[in-house]
Image (cartoon, rainbow, N blue to C red; front, side):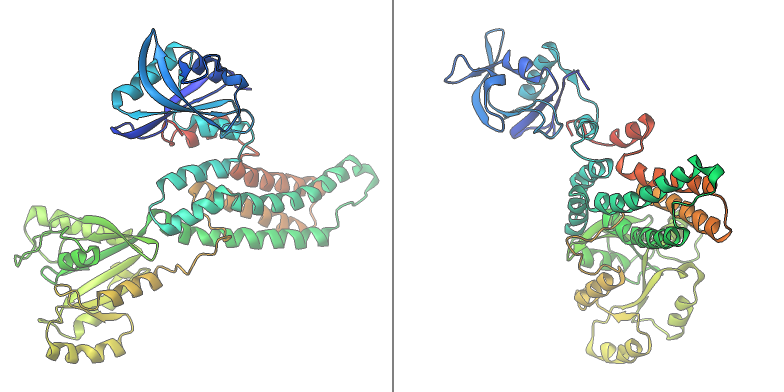
Length: 460
């Protein structure tokens, strides 16, 4: 049980039409009743009022009207935190927000720590740990795809899958543990062939979840796309064309871009992180050299590279040089021939698009064939249309726990193959269960919870 009452401003602390101040805990009704006066019912009592209703009145402190508010009531256990909760909707003045919060603290509430409302929801059994983390992902989602994944996890997508896996494994673990109690009688309660088939089945599902992390990470954080090439090939012009905005300075002077310029754009619900880089060339300019060095760093961390070539100063050998460039190994590489601004040049380069499948001819200046490039980026990102019930791993903590689970399951399979005794099998199975349980919070530590919820915003 958590006995202290917490309060925080749940909306952004800036001027707006309205703001919401949230209060949760055993004394939330008592504290709010002491400062709230119903506009009609002078005998209004919060603990007697109906839950999930909004009540209109004034916040009054020492005979001073602070604001006209709507006070919404949520009685335990039917609230976000599982505790008695009050949400005060006031006018969005920064002064009013801070004044009401100050009064609540003077009346006995404590300032909520980051994520404390969601942490209480977890501790009170309203959601598991993976669902709590999905709340943070939902708040920070920047695209429809990341929103869809967060909603699925919040509704228990990963929890339901892992719960089914754990339950099957627990049943076998209990049988093996039972064997240990009868070790002197040399009995076998857990059929080893059935256990092997089960572990193989669970391992297959764990492997599938692990493989989804690359996609999930791209959806959550954005697919990193680097624009590279020599100076003056139109990299900054392409960045502006893709963003449909004059983000980067464009000039005829070689080396105008000295450092990486980053921005994001969305194609059909998928977030892309676009990075314009300094032109790659030999230079004695110290600042430009630093920019070129950062270009190589950005290429290393990218998923997709768009290497630009200049159609007005072009030789076919340049394509082959780019294709064998060691910097691009392991990357999704597209060669972009830019500045196709005349019909003659366009016809000249048609043959290269047939010979080289990952070559696209464009005019960034005139925004010609940019839609074709959008389509290629979407295909290359590896993101098909996400189904509403598809479970995708986006959290690195979950990935690590699943990886440890897989190692433990492999140890079980090796043990079965080598006919090791039940006590050693039980140890590996217990470790696998522990790692699976850490994802949903069935197995957790105070340090882990503190680390997770400290990343939340205050008021959530």
